[in-house]
Every structure is written in structure tokens, then in C-alpha cells.
Image 1 (cartoon, rainbow, N blue to C red):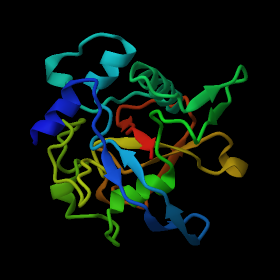
Image 2: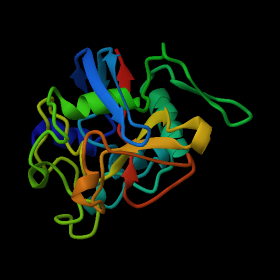
Image 3: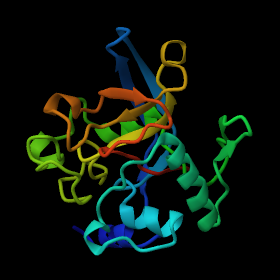
Length: 228
């Protein structure tokens, strides 16, 4: 692991990867629909948010040394939103989310702070210019149920994609901003990427899952994004 990635994981500073503008092809097998979308340039964290970073911002405390490089899990979509705002304030950036008295989350698209990636941004970054279901051979790039030994693993140990992003597939699922299908599932939000507990077929760039924004589980985390 590179020195810059170690620094990213161990300290509250959060270096990010610049993702170029482009176009991505998407599909939803459930409704048998395919489409393409333009993507503006943005910045994305090279690894999921770790326990060290999360603890330093949320609890103002250090976590156990053995856990510092492990992605945070057991965080809901709403937890991730709250972290984005708190970390933005900590970093002197404009918060991206307004939370109303009714609990509605409003995204200020012009804000400079940290936020969750959209589905389009996440898939575009995951593929990193490739066209297949994965950006590499699964065992080389991802922790999943056949090699994880039954738990979340240190971030950044597997091979990155072509844009220097680690663990885009496997290790932990990652919350995205988007609602999955409001007409069918109401407020359920999307998460992407597969996890340490997932079968191989669930670790792919186009695999989509969803749950309620209060849902927490031991293989679901998140990654930070900033607009350019």
C-alpha cells in the first residue's frame, strides 16, 4: 500500500481521486431498461470511509489500532448523510445536505462539501473506462465470500481499478444518494458493489441493491464524493 493511501486511512485528511467527465451505460435488469448518462467531473475517495476516519469525526476518539484501516460498517444511509455534513464542517466546507424538520434530506448541488455519490457517478468510477461486469479478475480486486474468511478486511489491500480506486467491488457495499424506485419501494436507497459476505455474482459494477435509509448491517458502508 502506498504512503499516501496509508495517510488517507490513518488521519482525518481525505485526499481524493479526480474522476474525469464522460459517459456511462446503465441498465436495470428488473425493469429491463438500458440507458446512457453524461457524467460531470468529480472527486471520489480512493477507499471506503474507514473506522479511523469515522471515529475521529463522529466520536472525536481513536479506534482500536487493529481497526484503523477497516471500512466502517453498521452505518445507515442517514448516518452517512450526517457524517458528510459533519466532516464538511470539520473541513471548512459548505455542507451538501439540509435535513428538514420532517426528516427530508435536500441536496444542495452547488455545495462544496462531502456527499454520497450518485448511482451514475459510482458505476462510472467503478468501471474506470472498462466495459465488462468487473474491472479485473475477482480474486485480485475484491474481498467476497470465497476469500474474505468471514469478515470485513483492511481497505486498499486488493488491486485498484485503472483510476486508482480500491475496493469498488467487494469488502463492503456502498450507499449511493439515489432512491431505488419510489413507486415500488418508497424511500429505499441504493447501495452498490458487493461485499465480503456476497457471492461472486453479486460483486459487479451493475449489481444494484436497496434498503430503508435507517438500515444498518455488518457489510454495508460508504465512500465520499465531492463535486468539482
